[in-house]
Image (cartoon, rainbow, N blue to C red; front, side, top):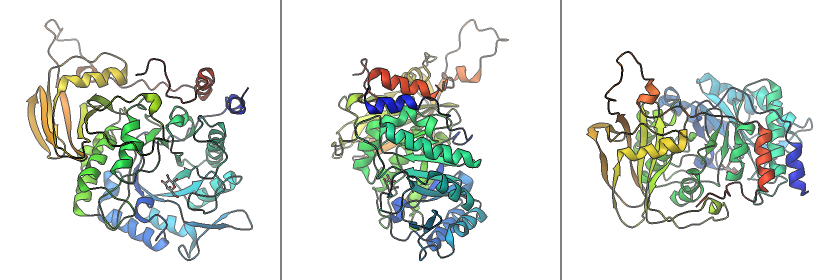
Length: 469
Ligand code: GAL
């Protein structure tokens, strides 16, 4: 038996993560897209906390302020991580206390390997010490990265990686403090294991621009909707604003599209710019109707319900395809939400604008795909444009012209269900049936059966399935 199979078999008897957190995708701010390693300091964290409050972001749900890589300097003689003294002269608890005093929650970054991706000390062999240290500082959220760990990430599923994630998860559980755990393993092969390991898990490499948003998120996440839901979410990476002062950026149009798509994908909404956020991005990130889609309590991740893009085999969705050209095509994404469906129409064509006409009844595809039950067929729906904030009346079709290079439009539709001729007046239809969708049954299989699936199929790649395209 191959060593990895043996290791997977040994992992059957583990407890799942059960911290009661992540019932909705996390929202907040993370330093990485803003600062990378330049300027991660107590001073800037205080400024970010102040700005978040000034902009009213916590009231909209942006509750976590997360310090990413480049805060740790070395390990002390007692084995504990020591923050960079110049950047954090009063230590990390002091910073966490300030963040808490602003009504925000405090998050910190670590890496399960020997070194972080930026070469700071990692947690391998110190999982318990680090979990206790973070909790002693008052951490509410931990992001655990995956650089320099013992695994073979391109040869999934990596038993070594999963075992290490479990080590830290268990160490954190053992502290007794509910701490949101966000994995950053950059691969989609561990989505099926995700909910037993953490409250969210990255599905691809870093989204740094529109090209990587296509490659590592949009191209991939439509295939992963089965795995995300209340308690644990597929994470297509953080939001990239359009400020030119941050380490990474998109055009204003693309970053707005990213926000709309991420909301339909039920993705974490982690802002990547704060001190230099411009008016356009602020307007994007404070659209309460789009946030409400992301935070919809049904917690059903959206999917592609129509596209004219080249067929992609699930088996081809591999991270090693780093620089797939963005195809010149269009997609429609849909997500069942409590009172209807959210829809994003997207033009990926970099050169030309596109007209897209979409029959509202086609969202039934999404209902079938996600909920596994037929949709109550409807032809018409009341349509609201979530960016123009306008009701468009009752429509059979949504016709739009989308600008080139990542433009999109987002709508919410409420189906008009035809009255059944013989419905008894006394018989009440449950609201969820009336709108044509039902809460997804989030049947959470024990971790052991996930592993046995991998073992039985000898999974070279977990997405390989005979019935796929
Ligand atoms: C990457 C990770 C980024 C950021 C960076 C820090 O591996 O995907 O989100 O955390 O490391 O070095």
